[in-house]
Amino acid sequence: MKRSFFLQLFLLLPLEMLKAGVVPAFTNDVAADQWLRQQSPSYLRMAQYVDSRWGFEFGVATNSPGGLDYLKDGKGHIDLNERLKGTHRVSVIVFEMTNLYQQERHEEITTPVRRGEQQDATKFAMLREAVEYDGLRLHREVLVELEQKVGELPPEMITWVSSTATNLTSYALPYAYDYFKAQAKGGHTEHYYRLFKKHAVEAADAKRNQTNGDMK
Image 1 (cartoon, rainbow, N blue to C red):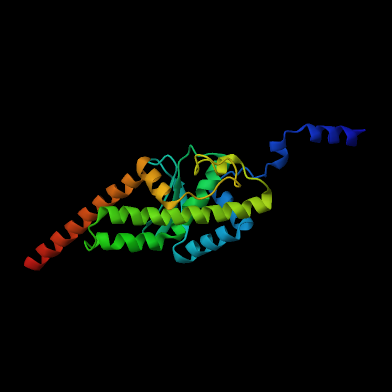
Image 2 (image 1 turned 135 degrees about the vertical axis):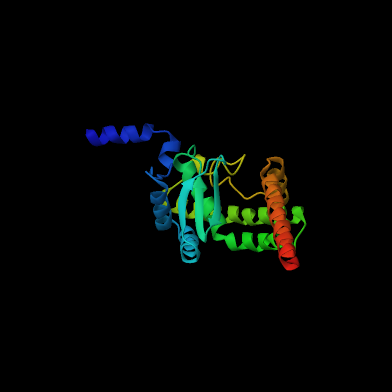
């Protein structure tokens, strides 16, 4: 009798609930990171590389609505806005890990600007955006592996990176042209233009200080 009751209840469940995968609710970001390492070989590879190069720690992002990554004093950081919740937050952790994993590419683009050797702001911004575009590909690789382990992923893990997709099947990376256009329209590329100006000022200050030092 009980078996029949539960069978009927199962058949009455919405199809979305029957298909939905189970991503745990984590008490902190470190726990989410450990779970991702266990579920996704691609995430594990990136995280272990970051561990071997700089290590990293989680922090709070107050000036960003999402997440950001950076190196400070030789250590990696992933900061997340406290408004990020649940599986959306887990997905953002994955993406920020892809950025930290590619930090050497970001530095290769940035170093010539800091030295005053590269003075093209658009080139700087587009190259930095290109690295992030590759990050989307790495991010999707992790999502594919997660879905293979836990079943269909919640939409919240996907909709923040795509305005049209609601599940992994319908989520494909955009054409590069469309991606760059959307990043510019949304104001993301402007962040890199501001960063370029900051580094250009640093380069000018360093050159001026060197000149003053040589004159003494």
